[in-house]
Length: 336
Image (cartoon, rainbow, N blue to C red; front, side, top):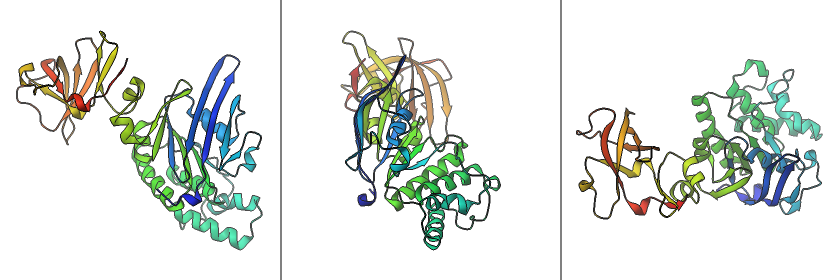
């Protein structure tokens, strides 16, 4: 964890946002620790961006309160909250150079010229853009423009940086590169980062902790490992990573078997003592280089996934009959 003295605590106390015909957010309580990289993860319409907008002050609260470093922000305008903000669409000034774009927040705050230059150049170096200060936005790639936006958000040294799907417009390879850069920048600057995404792999890569949103509420908060290993709801189990969900109608529960923890066998008699065995149909076998991925059809018609390093000799082609077995100690049982 970075130096926490440079980041601020964010506390959300029962915040809600209601509209005449819908509820965008309903009674969310959460504390983001100083210097933490917290990600808001969820599908479209789940409330994650609404929460970010309430922290920033772009949206007015219906109920509850937002506190930053213990100070209530409910009636504080956006420009006085002193938050760094990075959007998906970079909002750079096309007529200004990279240097002037980054220095703009300092100019607005009437920072002395020499100090503003020093801080702007330092922010560009942190963002990996040293030497680009005389270029204009149209001369930069999408990834470079996003780095300029990041440098501009950091240059006035805010204690909180809000990032609203900032990598969403980039291609997969560049997005993965910038994910690593964001982690590096976070470690270096030690600020509190709040990051919004619908991409679960991105959330797992970046975050100290993740808040999983669904239908205007937080389903679960935890580290990537906690959410993957110990989901507290079926929604979280299915949203974080791949899984095979086996329903037990007799007691209203489901078992969640992660792909790498299931094993395909030829017959139920091959299952280890104490381990369940369910008959399945292997619909597809896909070679991934590092191993194999199998799409399986369960007796109730639902689809699951199994991964393995080696392809069994007895598994001959698609639509083969097999048995799925797993270690029950490594498969959470949840309410349906």
